[in-house]
Every structure is written in C-alpha cells, then in structure tokens.
Image (cartoon, rainbow, N blue to C red; front, side, top):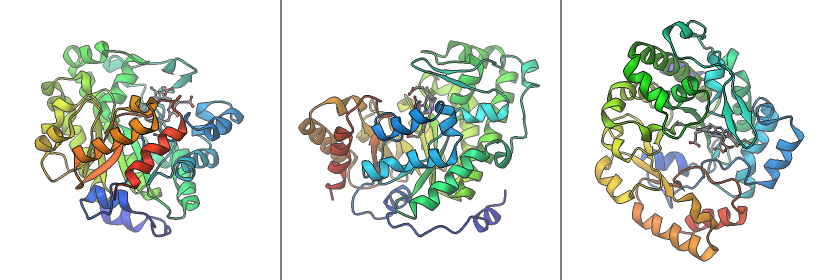
Length: 356
Ligand code: CP3
C-alpha cells in the first residue's frame, strides 16, 4: 500500500497523552526513558488469569477482540507501564497462511501440519489478506485504541521470517532448531520461497496493524541466536530490510533479535528506529557496535524480578546507567516469567519512572 494512502486511511484516534515511547524511539528528547515489558499482558497478572479462565482457551482469547483488548490494557492500569502491546501471538501468521497452531497447556505451541518441501508449499495461502484472515487482530487493535483513549501508545507486532519459518518447519519448539537450519543448506529454494511468503504476509499484516491504529511495531526474532552471521546475512537480512523499509516511513519500528549480539553490526544497517537487546548483551558494547543513530531497548535479566525489591531497584538503576540517558527504552532482556510477583514488576517500572 502507498505510504500516503495508508496514513490518510488511519482512523481518528485521541491524541496521545504519554508519547514517551515514540519520542524515545525517534531519538527525540525525553524526560526519562519509557518502560514496558515483553509479555506484560499475560499470566503474571491474576486479572489476566481470570479473563483467560472464563474463555475456552488461549486462542479463544486471542480471537475475541473485546477480551484481547481488555487484557492488553490491564498492564497499563495495574503496572503503570508507558505502552500497551496488543494481546495476540506471532503464530497467527502461519495460521493465516494455512497452518493452524494449537497451544498445549504446559507444553507450548504445536502445529498438526508442517511444511518441509517445495511440494508442501502448494498447500499454503500466498495472498494473505489481513482484513480477511486476521480481522480479529485488527478489530482488537481498533477496540484497544478506543478504550485506551490516548493514555499510552499501542505496540503492534509480528514474528521475524526466520522465527516463523522455524515453527512452520519444526511444528513445535526446539532447542537448536536443527531441522530448519538443515533445510537452509539442503533445500535453499524451498527456504527462500517460504521465507518470501512469510515476509510478504508479515508486511501486509504490520501495515494493516498500523492502519488499525498501532503506534509502533516490533518484529520478534526469537530464534535469531541459532544462526551464524553468514546465514543471517544471506537469508534474513534482505527480508528484514524489506520489512523495515515498508514500515519505518509509517511508524517507529523495533527489531528484537534474541541471542543476536553477534548480529548487531548487520542489524545496525536496517532502517528500523530501535534494536532490542537480550540480557546477555552488554549495553555499552552494543552502543559501540550500533552507533548513535538507533534507540536501544532492554535489557534487565528477567530472573532479577525474583530478587528482593532492594536488589531489583539496584539492578534496574545499574541497567539505566549502562544505557545512558539518550535513546533508551527500558524493558527486560526477554519476556517476563509467568510466576513473577506483579509487585516486583511494579518495583522495576517505578524505578525507571523515578529515574528522571
Ligand atoms: O508481550 C505481550 O504481552 C503480548 C502478547 C504476546 C504473546 N506472545 C502472548 C502469549 C507476544 C508479543 C507473544 C510473542 C511470541 N509468541 C513470541 C516472541 C517473543 C518471545 O517470547 O520470544 C514467541 C516465540 C511466541 C510463541 C509462543 N506463544 C510460545 C513459545 C508460547 C508458549 C510459551 C508460554 O509462555 O506459555 C506461546 C503462548 C503465549 N503467547 C502465551 C501468551 C500470554 C501463554 C498462553 C497462556 O497460557 O495464557
């Protein structure tokens, strides 16, 4: 879609009262770093578990715009974070392409059907239309924008092509993703073709999220860490570049490549505004590798939230000083663990907010 027609077609939304996230992403002046948490909408909150319990299952919640919107806003009300992230999952893209997912309690995602050969690709839908195949997410975004009434920005997201490829090939989680990595060498034509289809669907999906009201989009490359520099450069960078170039004229874009410290010199060339860091990455070294033109997001070790409030305060302050005051969005280095005490999460959030 044309940039201008997309911007013109955005519905009218209440002006943002707190736009710290967007200013920090664009490198504008901020009074203090904005703070939110990956996986903030979820099992840490008893209020989430209550909504989840009255629905049939995770997918019923994801596919119900009213309830998805309710749990998206909970962390804003309860934890006081500076952004909401739409309650959904990266696995909705494989499903829209024709591979439905299931979420098995205490086990994780499962795909009854997978793709592993060029032949298999014929079964996939190549022309994903988000307004048709992912309308429930877009409805949830529109509902959430209305209900947030401009309190904080809303983050949209999708998985990076590599991470989605991993699930579509393997059909479940994996430690080393040996099979998807094997197919990059053994069946490069299959890999390129599937990665292209995922990329096109994801661009259309993110553009539709922006049109529905998402103020910033994040691309999650959760399994980037298993790829070498060379494979990442060959198979992933051209697709990430396409995604960032298509979205960054519209809204700020964040790329989070977990385990991707070795990839930072490449990622620094993307047109995204922000790069997310996992907790193993040293913020000072990352800043040297990335330069001054990007915002960095992260990266408190999520396990620190099991420590005492005093330790959480100290470690959060240390993290803030390691990033410095410029171009930083405070977050964890990965998703918050489900059994962390919400009071401890509040200590983290408040420590950042008092840092001005
Ligand atoms: O961050 C948020 O609060 C927004 C919601 C969100 C979910 N998944 C909800 C969810 C986001 C941004 C995601 C992204 C996601 N999903 C990623 C990328 C980020 C990452 O963690 O690296 C990945 C790899 C997935 C795939 C996925 N979905 C897995 C591996 C699991 C099972 C693991 C788990 O935590 O149970 C899910 C399920 C899932 N997605 C849950 C939530 C809240 C748990 C479902 C529940 O029991 O309620």
